[in-house]
Picture 1 (cartoon, one colour):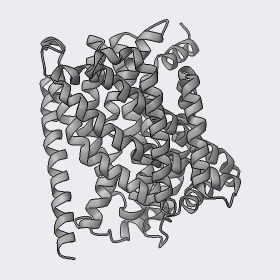
Picture 2: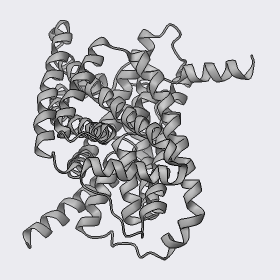
Picture 3: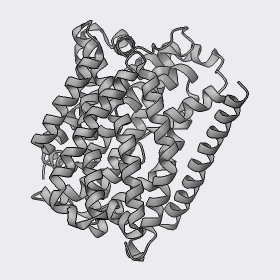
Picture 4: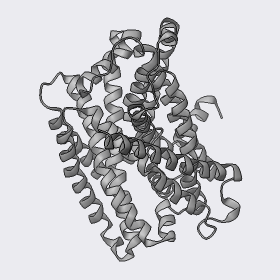
Length: 423
């Protein structure tokens, strides 16, 4: 087998892991990670690496469960109790509107900047959600997979190039710039907002499970368990590594420069494009704009498909007689999500970063729930045989992760309540 054939076969093997990368590498990387570096400097790289390590076991548990047992994580939740499915549906329905409103509104702001429109991004946000819903209806799963692979490579190479070019010229300024205090309410709030979606919200572990099972079902050449785990690990590591580079990008170009990112989505997009073009060249602007738009557009499609799919699946697992109504449940979920997104986007229309911080903070605060449930599922020998459960080290890391997520959430809430009380 020649080198080209090996590369082709390797690329074809990648599937749900790349969808995971698409769902994760959007606002969390382009905006939150870059803002983190621009505001606090290289110290935020440690936050990115730490939260990527903390969350890894819970995503790995999900992939392992489906690869070994051909059961989804939601089936694991159902085994623990029907009430867990009820809680999952309620939490997901609330979070879904916040998340899809956020990613679609960011996509709309990028598009508004690209065409130089004076019309409100809210109009484009409604149009984008409508287009994404149409694509979801058509169901081009394979098309989405292939597009995502190309875009991820393009953005990755562009970001790495800028970081390499900017490093020798700006590292001295970064080293001599005082870092703002991270251990106050403002710093802790931003830290949670960063870690909530890095490398992805923990509810995405449910999606990974659903995507993997679907890949096994629709593929003419289903991957082996080893290939499926490798696919996931590649997607996860790619996300973590790119988050580090985006933090470095914000640090090297903006930290200590006296310039801050705007809260306006259109202005923020302009600043972000300039970060790249000022180092690569003006010729790169159209390419980068398309790459950013496609990244956020694919994230919106993935979220708009995954949330209704998860809610509908959880509903018929709670009530098996509802399975025949799955398509109807799915489209009702999409419709509710559509209107919920419009309402939220309208409320935050003048402050894109405020909407994003709200969404990511909520994601972090509910992360302990998913972490605990995933741990309960993967350690239940009635769901997955003992011999196929994770290693002792991975289980210990999972227990540490649960304690970390709960501890930081409690610290944030007590700090926020204390500050609010003394106002």
